[in-house]
Length: 114
Image 1 (spheres, rainbow, N blue to C red):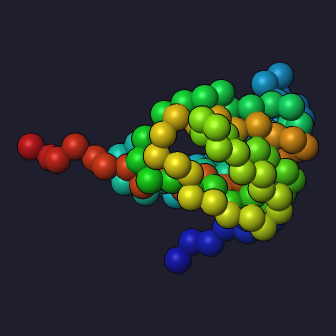
Image 2 (image 1 turned 30 degrees about the vertical axis):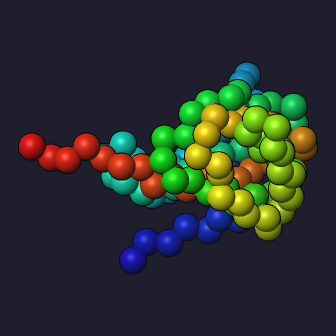
Image 3 (image 1 turned 90 degrees about the horizontal axis):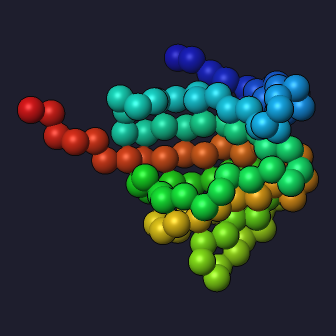
């Protein structure tokens, strides 16, 4: 079995985000494009965002550190360290209110193999 310290990874990604001109850093800890389940730890510096985008499948967000705001149309959710939310299956965006790290879990449908 492989294990990952989310606390250590969060600190590492936040340090990378501070060094990045984009103010963000990410690391997929499980899955990827060839898998249905993908889990990614992402850091965003305060004021940085993931602009509005479509949801590729079922998704959840768990705040590991900081404060983020998820918006989907007129709905908004503020999450802080330890909070968890199922992301609505519609266009949405995410803003880091303060330096933040979160784990995004996505379950997408893969096309059937020929």
